Amino acid sequence: MDLEDFAGLQQVLQDAGLTGISLEIFLALQVVNVLLASWFINLWPALGEEIGWRGWLTPQLLPLGVIPTILITGVIWGLWHTPLMLLGHNYPNLPGWLSVTFMVVFCILTGGILAWLTIRTNSVWPAALGHSTINATAALPMLFSAEPTYDPAHVGIGGTTDWIITAVLLAIFPVTKSFRSAPQPSLDPASAWPSDYRNTQ
Image 1 (tube, rainbow, N blue to C red):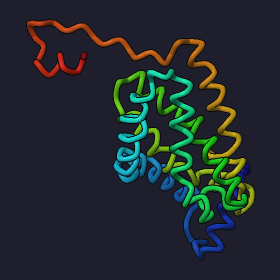
Image 2: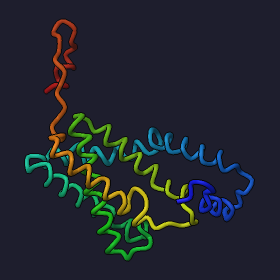
Image 3: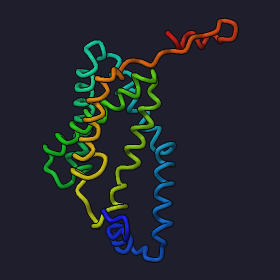
Image 4: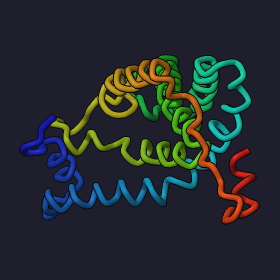
């Protein structure tokens, strides 16, 4: 990392012929871009996926238990990305079979976090926003790298460094019994709408 001179980013900008742009302004624009992409641009494609993975498949598998659900959903989700992995996306420095393996591990761990969001909130929207943010922030390590390139197999949200963080979180959730659905609020019959009762069932 280079949080002082941002040497890698400056080299990328120079190679792209963008030497006239202020580094501070460029970094600020990237933060704005991540927010816009997370909340608007990437959200709808991510929602489409999450309706399938966490909205439909996860509840179907939950009778098997939380851990089997996370493992099965993660493996299917990871293998679903196989064509992209074999084309060199996400892990371009790895051979095809290993990039698919890395993607499956990433999807198991990250899918566990997204499953937790869905189960706790009884909604697919938090998982969709999480998925969208993951996609929007995938290239952020480039902003802080000391070199103009980095290895995404070990750096960033899809790399082994991320695996450590998500694995620790997933180990904590069962211990704290966090995979239980959040309690539903009690309803006042005098002020509740009929649709409010449907949402508590």
